[in-house]
Image (cartoon, rainbow, N blue to C red; front, side, top):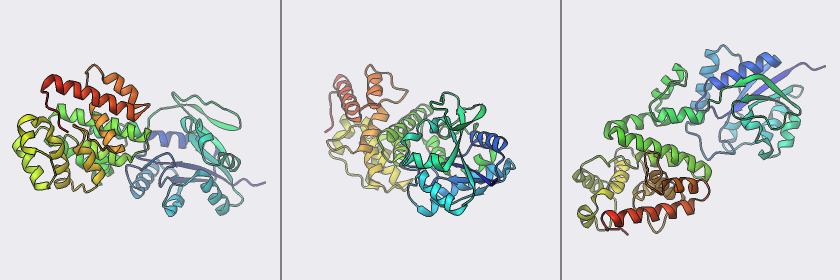
Length: 362
């Protein structure tokens, strides 16, 4: 009888945190595997990008596992593929590499409840004995043929931690991971530090709210999450600057703005969108045309709006610090239809402009 067992734990680890350690320790106690294999994802099939690249995420999970005195091996299978990799491919790889082993696959109940959406999930279930950690708020829908770890585990997520980091809050992560993030300027930590020096506290809070919203919308509508985050973080970077300084930035960055002189008199409050795009180019060395476009259209909109343009426009107008009459409807619509949300947002903004100044830039 073969007693060689392998516990497999794959995740983005973006960044790794105590939940990852908690469920791994629990699974090790439960099944006492011969070996533990950690699989950092190169690019999850359900994501457009990760916030930290593979080498950093690999390094951080390695640091955290070693700090907790866990024995493990990291398999760089997904890195070698350099593309979205599916769990059934990992299953084939491990079966070929460890022909006589019994495999266990560890996951949270949130992931397990979606397993039927995985590509060739039946092959995955045939290869692995599934171990599920019950996360608070995610009741296990089908308990047949799985091993459920004792107790319920925290619902701490990497998304929650990244949102905290946007506010310069590292309270949910290990101190060694915090140091690594800051040393390597991960999760926009250096950019955030620079933004805080330029913006008022109120403006910064709006920026973070817009960024969190833009990230969520990018996930819903399959846009590039990293680009959405960068565009949102920088969309109002110059709004607290004097108009004369904004105009100088536009000139230096060679941003093209129609009727700039007229705008300076009739609608100076909208000039920051081009100045912010220019500042993104000059200060933060942003060259990506999609990001710069989204920044430069986030206030006025445009006849031609890309997916990212609309995401930043909507994220800005429906940020949590907004309280105008139509904002709740825009928030609801944004979860269902970006097209409808954008049209409603434009309609609300035009109504406001006509009431305030009457000057509409087109």
